[in-house]
Length: 109
Ligand SMILES: *[C@@H]1O[C@H](CO)[C@@H](O)[C@H](O)[C@H]1NC(C)=O
Ligand SMILES: *[C@@H]1O[C@H](CO)[C@@H](O)[C@H](O)[C@H]1NC(C)=O
Image: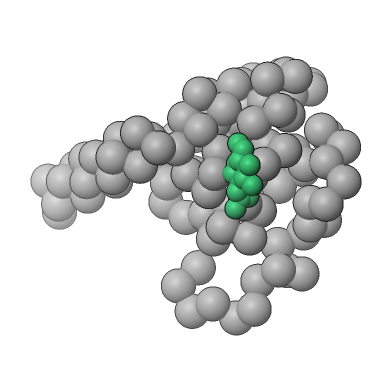
């Protein structure tokens, strides 16, 4: 069992690396890394950096919502509750307040 788990985690990490080449949901990999200190579970910073907010301005939030509860965030040690607060912390005007308003019953969450 443990071996299977390791394989699975390795696969997720691999997918992440692959996606990381272009970033996810129109947020560059650099942008994600800028935001990570603010939304990680371990000792997060109070406010996102300017670079993080700048990266989020062109983010595809509907797309990001699909990652909300995904294993990807858990693997990266990101607090998804906090991640969803980022647009507000950055005062991004057209960002959805919550994923509920943009999620239309997509089966694969
Ligand atoms: C993606 O980001 C670029 C700028 O970085 C922006 O011009 C474009 O509109 C964005 N695309 C989407 C789908 O939000
Ligand atoms: C995640 O973030 C929320 C909001 O900032 C906070 O209340 C919660 O305690 C955090 N969870 C963990 C596991 O750090």
